[in-house]
Length: 412
Image (cartoon, rainbow, N blue to C red; front, side):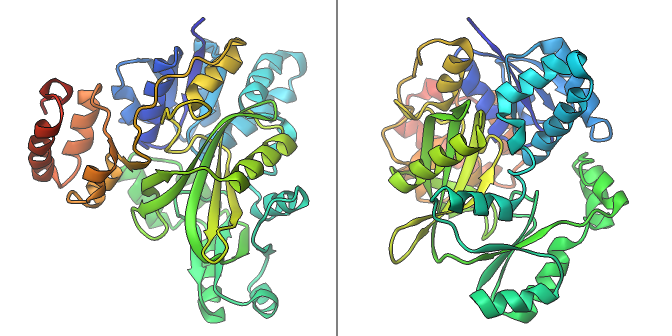
């Protein structure tokens, strides 16, 4: 059986192209709802791409569901997840006429009771603490005056985060009360019109237009700063059970608050327990990310955030219990898991093109597993040509020719 999986994304993140490749290799038919020029459209295994229009997102997703008739939907970013939540509650109000869509979204994301919780950071942290999961102190900051009360109780440094933000946006690390006050107003404010216009015109991304026009303000949370190393997990869940999970320590990042570019595969009992407890409590299904801080002095893992969507590591097939796309396919089909061989024995993974774009001379491109999708030369070509480091790529390709079989490297 080859189930149809529908990936829904409002962004142009390359990680969704890699996820589509992994799902196809696991034995799935893959369709996508995505903006124009999304790298996923370059993947040869993609059956069909449905347009995502920011001014009518629910209708786009609804049309794709009606046409593709997927067995599962995987949201690729937070806004896509929110769209699916909205679609669920709209269809729920239609009674029996909305049963198919509601059943599909529940099967894909989990219990609808969890939908309002996963984006409320303070509520998630409170729930995790009740479950015995180690978390930093987290509170909603409703007004500027609450910051002084926070400082008296917990001190600084602290992290201010806006509910619903992702990719480092809406997050500020603050060292003093005055710095916290300035950051509070920045994080709480609606998107700036110039920023929304730039994204709409240059990136053809309309997702900020409506929040800007409606002047929507964000809920801001303060979280105690945990000094240590960042780590991330991605779990494949099914009706509250974790089917497989990846735990990786962040070694390099695009910038201080940006996405990881180099990760190291780890085993961590605290992270596994946290993912299992939260999946069970929220009755999660599909792919869900969990972000942690590994405390410097103790090594204790602190859960700091849940991402109710696929993250950039979902395509990595790293052996038994760590092949997430194979685990999801098996759950959908009701069949035993057919895991693929590990893509590498190297625990250090340099994500492509992120680490190469960050630093073409990075040592991790040689010492780690450089996660280049050689089987999709058109995807590589587009990603490389968008970069200012085209000459560096050509030089590196010559070096790789000396290390790997020439027929593995596409001519670009």
